[in-house]
Image (cartoon, rainbow, N blue to C red; front, top):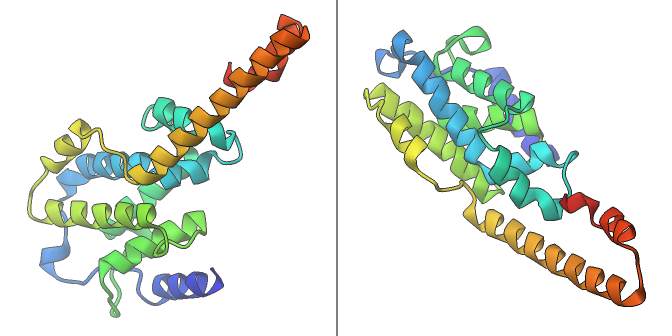
Length: 202
């Protein structure tokens, strides 16, 4: 983790720009569509949603929370990450070109790490999100703006294995709660007491 922090930090300190060539400059009119594509990718990334929601939601309720809120409820941190990546792609603010340049995909990883402080390269879900962001940038350079429409239509999560694991945890907890509820009835526990014990499912 510490080495990741140092390496990503060095990327942003020494080379916070894209290669200074015409082929890496996006058309200004593509900004709103590009911003939409970036947000779609970030809100579909299961691991990022888990990191954002960790302080608010029980782990065994996480799958339902993500299904209900991802892309529908705006999260301040996700919005800031999206804005930062958009600035990177459009070479604005701190990402204006300087002389030293490195591959943009490394800068995307460094930007995401800056916000969530979790190892990106060791997490398949986060790496997949970074790769999709880089591909989105490449597609826009080639004028393929219809990729945003494809992202909208796709039901696929980024990090499907993690989503399945969360769903399994959710099902197991529901089963445990059902068993406890049945035992409560047999033991004479009141309906009010059962509701208090199960209130995190309400």
